[in-house]
Image 1 (spheres, helix red, strand yellow):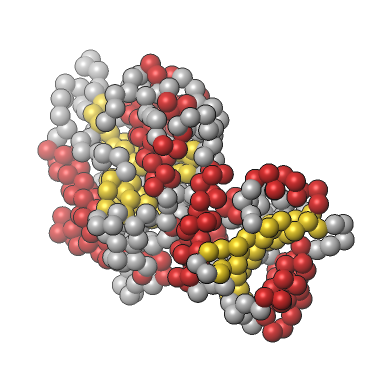
Image 2 (cartoon, helix red, strand yellow):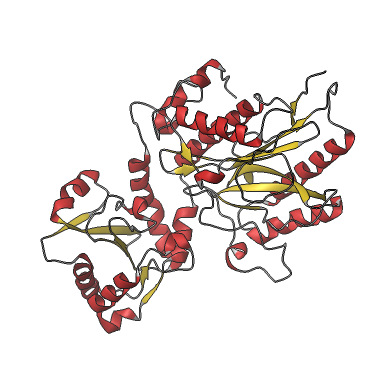
Length: 446
């Protein structure tokens, strides 16, 4: 690892950009070499050209139609070039001969900017009175594809087609083609779950920064005075200084908790005390696109202690071993359910209380991204849904190692060593070095 200085961490990043990481000693990753401020437009184009054809072929999609509009846009607008849509626009992706031909149907007032982006093969300019959905429908009737994917799904990221848009599309394509519409969920999962090598490097750099900020926050703790909410505010301040965004709901990022389990929650005003395990669940979004999700744990020593008590260390080691068991099971071709089952077996052997949460989830464009879920074995039912899906090279996961115990007076405390890993051709690789030891916070001797 390259050396990173404390002084450098005080400098600010341009908003939404990792270019400032160069000043922090974090680079240069390939994605930020030179003067490029944001690599997303170039990476997006490469994803459309290289990954989308493969995804459409694997799922058996001939045509994929996405409708974008102002104020209530499709969740995938950023991925197809429709993030700035005002009036209704349609983006149509047509599979042919191992490639994809993309067509954008846009109002005249928005066509120039979309042409400048250069993402689409064809821009159809619509004059006043011409509807984008009607125009795309005419094209589909001419092409007569055997399957047309639309964003209508129980999965939110693939559920952007509104009811009125669906009615308009049905009128535009006619009854014969309506029967060929089906949900794009499988296509979206296949396409978005795989990250290009350059994207993985961006996420790696972002993960390094995420962990470094957590360690910075822990260095500010004064037992008996500092509150969980103080650590959360510290991290929010550092995020603003560095120009990075929240990876999930801002009110719950970071989730700092030194007390009993609270699940997905906000940091409270609980005062941190000797004997506490402190959990910080934290994620950042960089370039407005890529997310991280990492937990780091600290232990507050009693006055005069130099190491945690044996019981505390035992709990930590059991949690860590759960993480490593899950990591060892992660490889291409394995179902997400099976990874979860490996950890559940270890938890039972280690004497952990049951934990309701799954072992892990994809992370990338959202903190809970598209792809296989490392979960399901906590329930008696057979695997279903995302837990049945097989891991593939290029998928990135955030995953936990669990150890949970009951507290006097009720409630539980769970250590959940959360790391990030990418699936390779042969196994899995930690995105950054995992946490091996508890971060120790000394208490002043009175």
